[in-house]
Amino acid sequence: MPKASVKRSIECKKEQLIDLVLDIEKYPDFVPFCMGAKVHEKKEQGDLLLIIADLTIGKGPFKDTYKSDVKFNKKKDSIYVTNLDGPLKHLENKWQFKEENKITKVSFEVDFELKNDFLNIVMTKSFQFGLDKIADAFEERAKKLFSKT
Image 1 (cartoon, rainbow, N blue to C red):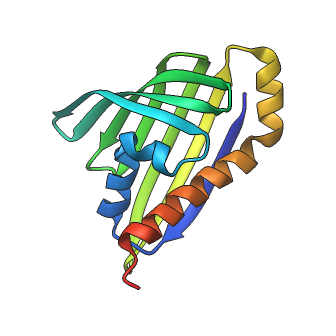
Image 2: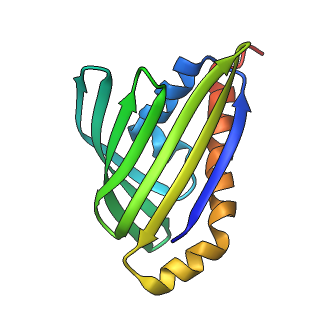
């Protein structure tokens, strides 16, 4: 199964970065290969914000949509995502946010498996590169939205 992780330090408030990550419907505006996003359900349950959303990922004629279950834990400043439906056999991604001196340290881990074994092999080779590109996109978006310059 492809696995990868990235860590970044971004000059913005933790709440701003969390809001950016939870604004799923804006992903097609800045996340590489994200062609569409739709939130089906969003509700609060105690210290959790629960979201059910679709992301359409692809390039050119090759695209697929997967449904995910997103849980934001307000007390732990973490977001946990699992797949519900689509081309993924397994998906787990975790975001962790920690603010120190106006810098938010974010850690993003992804572990997934596609239903197609051949594509799993292909993805394993290039997945860290792809995840770095996604992290770059979130960092650039944060700078654009929250930078004081």
